[in-house]
Image (cartoon, rainbow, N blue to C red):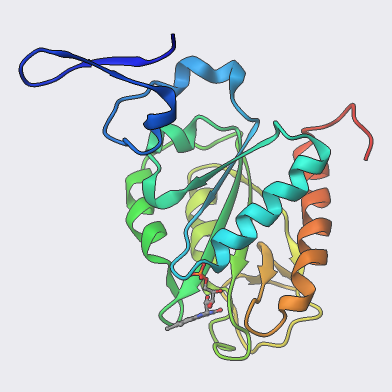
Length: 215
Ligand SMILES: Cc1cc2nc3c(=O)[nH]c(=O)nc-3n(C[C@H](O)[C@H](O)[C@H](O)COP(=O)(O)O)c2cc1C
């Protein structure tokens, strides 16, 4: 029988079953021991009103078409540094909030990452924003997150052309590319499914995670 044993205050042994673990974040789970059963890519998202979460799971479904064991999805709001750093391939989903700011859960998480070594890790970001409502800060949080992970030594992949968007300024922009996929559920939701499908294929190639499996 699989389960996790822990002592309560009176020293009575309590058995937590695997199915209960996800509702019980205080139970210490050693993820590092399970590395060979782990997905190759960790997808971490933060989401305040559900759009980025929706895109995260649509993306997971797209990866699953290629290999259902490739990606595991995590909410950054309930992720430990250890869980985050156990992956060599990371996909990070972030919306921009409050006019050019990081989404709350990312804002809380990023300082904890300070001093971590991300060299050799491959990171690809997808950003959510509203180009019509916030055209002077479109996807700004992507630029901030990209700066942080690159400072820690990570390689950034998944860059995406800025054509087909209309905005004035963006911290996510470098020449004619964004540092991430750009998703706009307010103004261009009809374009989202095709963008996700194309970007997932791009990232699979750039990460070289399915080298021996043609598309
Ligand atoms: C108060 C407010 C501020 C926002 N600020 C920005 C912004 O500066 N830049 C941007 O691109 N989008 C901005 N947005 C749009 C959000 O990023 C967009 O709605 C996104 O899909 C939200 O994702 P979430 O539901 O995962 O939190 C803002 C939205 C609100 C309501």
